[in-house]
Length: 136
Image (cartoon, rainbow, N blue to C red; front, side, top):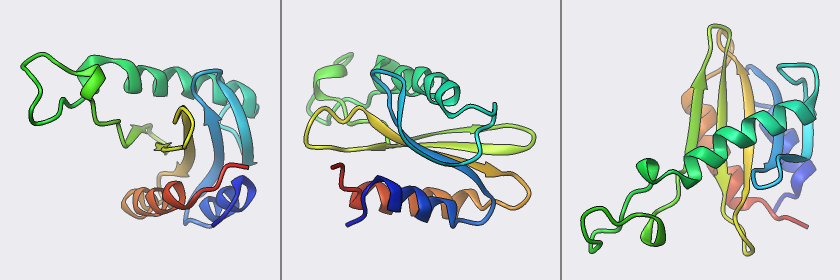
């Protein structure tokens, strides 16, 4: 099972990958980075993407209540958001949440070039990477 550095290197091997990071969305800190950053600074990118991830993970609108939940119930029985995709004119940003044995407040961020990247392949590969990631 890969650690952070190996996971990010595998993400960077995807067609069109420009940059990758593992980010703690509760603090906004990058736990590891590879490649480039859209704004030239991985820490700024980590903080900004953490805000988006936090909103997706915490807002009731994105939580899916379990099948036996009462109407309007969400947070305590919610299934977590799997990923968030932001499309820009020049690229894709894929944020894939990673389940951990502690608080599951980390996600993989992959920045893809729009002309060279394959969004479906990236989502599939990030899912596998997130499931196999070992946080040491």
